[in-house]
Amino acid sequence: MSKFMSERFSKLIAYVPGEQPRDFSYIKLNTNESPYPPAPAVFEALNAGEIANLRLYSDPECGELKRTLADYLGVGSENTFVGNGSDEILSFAFMAFCDKNIPVSYPDISYGFYSVYADLYGIEKNEIPLREDFSIAPEDYFDLGTTIFIANPNAPTGLCLSAGEIEDIVKANPDNVVVIDEAYVDFGGESCVQLTKKYDNLLVIQTYSKSRSFAGGRLGFAVGCKPLIGDLEKLRYSTNPFNVDRLALAAGVAAINNQSYYDNNIFKIIHNREYTTSELRELGFEVLDSKANFLFASTAKLSGAELYAGLRERGILVRYFNRPRIDRFVRITIGTREQMDALISAVKEMLNNA
Ligand code: PMP
Image (cartoon, rainbow, N blue to C red; front, side, top):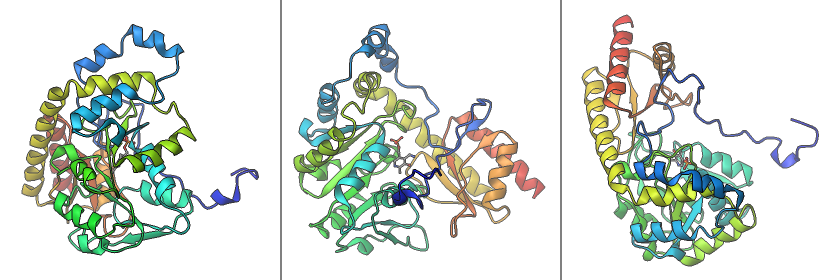
């Protein structure tokens, strides 16, 4: 750290993203990307004409993409917000709806960025323990008097609350914003987007990174009542009005218009998830019931660190969290059937050597 860094950030510990090796020979099951390319319509949209247009700024209102998303989701354009990945939208939501007088609550085991944003913005953290079985107890989130962030499905567990359970939480906190991070909802969760029409304190955030094969394109969106969206827009225009570039805007529209392609990929990923779950359970693994594009799995025979290292030696990257309660687990992204078979063979070999 230089001597010039503001003291505000002297103790800040930055988020550490999953490894992105330049060596493409790994089977990459560590950051929940899609194994499939973006839709054919996205390839067509990112054409020479769009590249030539890069000399012009992008539309700061993101008008066409907002209209496309609004039609697709059955909400109004004014109820949508577009960001440079959902991480950016989460950042705006922490900035907008929390401060030194409004703490934030979220599950103690969840997306690691929540605690980093809280520290970045100087927000008091109320980390609520998951139940012993790693599920979220909805009643722990009633009448909190804080802003609430919940990933649904949760990460890295993959476990889900129903829309009804989320609605109970939203109803029980009428004076605070509840943010539902639906990064993984397309893989079998129940979306709360429609509930945003009924509650003025609910913001739902989704991403193109997972089900729409666009992690490297950086595009996310949020849905909420007009005043909540207005708050986020105020911060976006005060930070970077051109936060979504032209190529991402064009790809974002094309992707929604080619949704059947993604639906087919989602179908395959769910199928591979169920297949991998039963194969691993057959090998004695504990595998949580995931509704996401990843599994959270452990075995009594090897620690999480050993699983991670052994798979890496065999050319397969997974995610390991060196934290109490979850250090016996690894998080495995669901890839193609061939990739999952390679994972299962590697695991078998490791178990035989254990
Ligand atoms: N929320 C959750 C729960 C995630 O796991 C991720 C991916 N790391 C994100 C949000 C951020 O995704 P992105 O910024 O790529 O949209």
